[in-house]
Image (cartoon, rainbow, N blue to C red; front, top):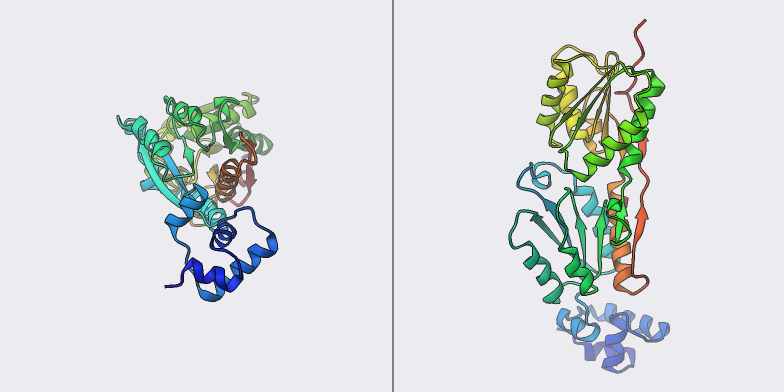
Length: 340
């Protein structure tokens, strides 16, 4: 096994200098390049324990997604978070950081203990938290009191007291409303996620604000759980009231369920009813007609979360307030025209 001593000898530096060079320490750039070249030539694999002793860091962060026993676990039931994780990993790989992925329930009595361990056992340099529901987030005090690096996805609504990267669900919902108004839709429906879900709240708020009841003759909404079956069930519930001109589904899975329901009822998607989803996942291209959807840029969000957290870890800044814009991606499912 190649040792650090051998790398240092080849680079003609001391072991201490070689260690600093390989771990981002304060050495001349020319020295760093020489040491890295020597390590590469010898196929040297740095000791993780040695790096921790040298830098005081583990080069590992955690990403924890918060769930609730009251609702379907979308982490396991859908692929909603796949692109988010991909984005995080793409940044961490470049910086030679590792990722620990955790899923924690708000209803876990040991939740505070989990965050105490995150801060106290020194196995992590920082944490990305993905809240989903309007619940108690007192565990954030543990992180803030210990000045432990963290960033949250979504909750700009929590105010300036937290570090966040927000996905601007409000603007996304408003964009869908603007689309329906431009089409001349008068009978509109919303199939949303759980009423306490942060995404569902903001997407509905933006959608309703964008509609502003202008020219609407009928409006209905249904609260599902972001899964395909709940989209189908929601569409059935709405059809018992009236056949809408347009349906906004607060994610693509529910939109797929709604389209399946409409097709079974002999109602033509686009021709009879416009359907728009949210998140712009691969499923948009797997339904007929292809689904118009709001792109949340989940991979970009993951990249932003990782970059901002690493910047805090490196001491480049102490707080994060960033918004990633959403974009409406038009396909065929919204191409509705008023009947003459």
